[in-house]
Length: 237
Image 1 (cartoon, rainbow, N blue to C red):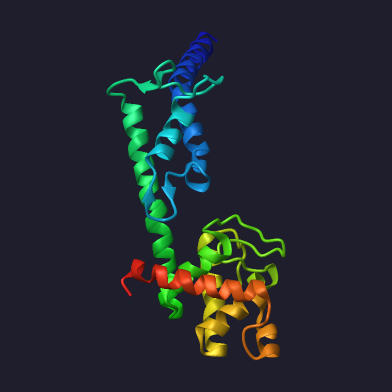
Image 2 (image 1 turned 90 degrees about the vertical axis):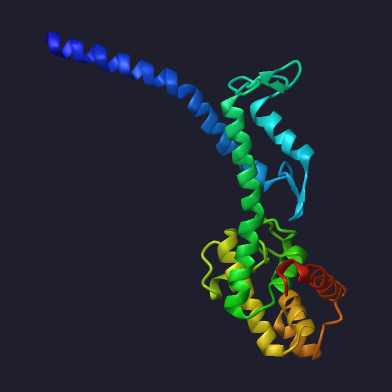
């Protein structure tokens, strides 16, 4: 019995130690988990794809690690009066490194995603990027009024036909969208009609034997081609 009681006390002691030491770590991990907004929303420190924004970076750090006013349960790693971090803070140094890494990945991963799928389908990568820019403005959660989804705005039926299980997952959406774009290029043999078909559907292009007389589609084709010429230098092509 004494051994059982002693073991119980030891167990509670270890649990208390773990609870105390893990509390700050847990809060930090929760903050980092919540920091997905850093990449996915307006707090991202990148304007567009290549333009660094120092103000947004500072806003991210202050919002998650130096809130003012202080919120219950928030990590407070700075002086709330001056908003200055404690000098030599290892946690802040770690967070800054993590933020920089996330920022680099924010650029590198989309570029690799486009390059891999563009090359696999023999589509100019600048054209894939131009379609993404025109369709969703690089917002992987975008949904149009017609129900098109994700970066390349795939309709649910088209996504199913392409074998896409989750159109909001960038890797799947770009893979499916690039394959569909390749099929339109093969069908029509030129970029203008292929883009018109991507926007309005191949039936409309077939019916009008060219770009349909829809203002939206005509503006879409001009916009994508303008983006395409602008992005062409991004990939060294």
